[in-house]
Image (cartoon, rainbow, N blue to C red; front, side, top):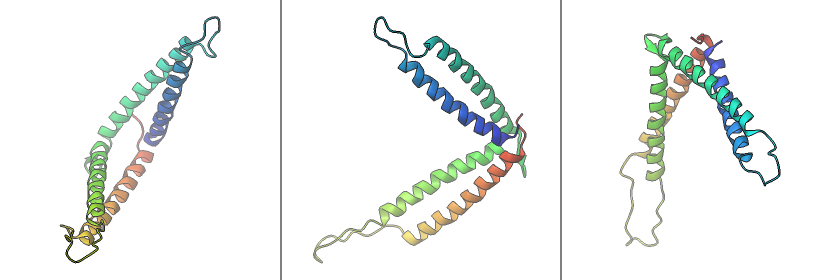
Length: 150
């Protein structure tokens, strides 16, 4: 199985677990004399089975991420770089948005509010970082489809 397929399976298992939890909770109480639509104990068995599958899959995905390398860089390291790029981009975007707010003055005697940073310069940084993120994400996706799950 390719790593990308395992990641898709993990997403499916997470959705299945969420649905099972919801179904269990929906059948946890019933009016006296009635039976639940679904047996909560059967649902709990399914839930535990899905969680066990997820645990094994997460272990194998993490193992694969640690030992899969490209140009002497592990997939785990590339993912950390991607996560930090996203944080950096979002911080810079917030700065651009804050510094770009228009403050209207009715008269010349009112206080003038000016940005403390060069918005164009910061926006260029956002654009450059966004390009790096796209390229890095494409690289990670390519690796995911080439790497075999351990």
